[in-house]
Amino acid sequence: MGMNVACLDLEGVLVPEIWIAFSEASGIPELRRTTRDEPDYNKLMNWRLGILKEHGLGLKEIQDTIAKIDPLPGAKEFLDELRDATQTIIISDTFEQFAKPLMVKLGMPTLFCNTLEVAEDGTITGFKMRCEQSKLTTVRALQSCGFDTIATGDSFNDLAMIQASKAGFLFRSTESIKKDHPELPAYDEYSDLLAAFKAAL
Image 1: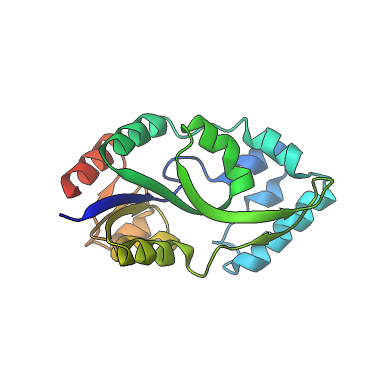
Image 2: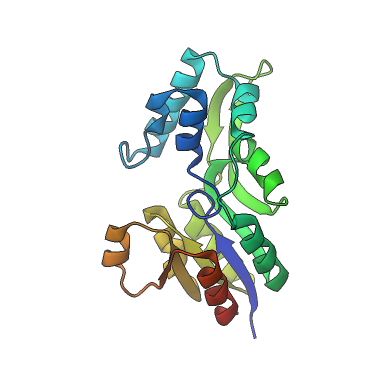
C-alpha cells in the first residue's frame, strides 16, 4: 500500500479567486483580470503590480484587505476531515504573503506556492515562481519519493496534476473543462469530493 498525499488547488476549491475578491474589496475593477484575459502569467502579474503601485497599495494594505476574505462555505470542515484521513498539501500559483491570512482561517494547512519580493517599505517589487509547471512538478516529486497522489482542482492549470495522479477529480470546474474531460469525475459539493478522496485512499 502506497502512502497517499492529497494535493489540492487553493483558489476556486477552498477560497474564492483571490484577485477577484481583492478587486471587489479594494474597489479596483482592473484587478479582476485573470489568466483567461492574459494567458501570459508573468505579463499579468507585472501588470497587476503596476496597478497596486499606482494606487499606493503595499503588502500591508493588501494583506489587510485579504484578511476580510473568507474561505468558501464548508471548505474548512472539508479540509479538517480530509487532513484527518490523510496527509494533505495545497499546491497553488498564489503567493505565500497573499495566502497567509486565508491559511490562518483554514487552520494553517501546508501550502506550496510562490513568493513575492517586497521592499523594506512594503512595496511589492517583484515575484519569484517556485518552479516551472509548479503543480505537475510537485506531484511528480512527491511520486518520486514514494507517495501516491490524489488531486483535485477547478482549472486548466490543475489538469496536469490531476491526470498524473493515482486518482483525480474536478471540483466546481467550468462546463467546457468538464466537457473536454469526461474521464475525470467532477463534483460540486464538498461531501461528494470528500467521499471520492476517501474511496481513493
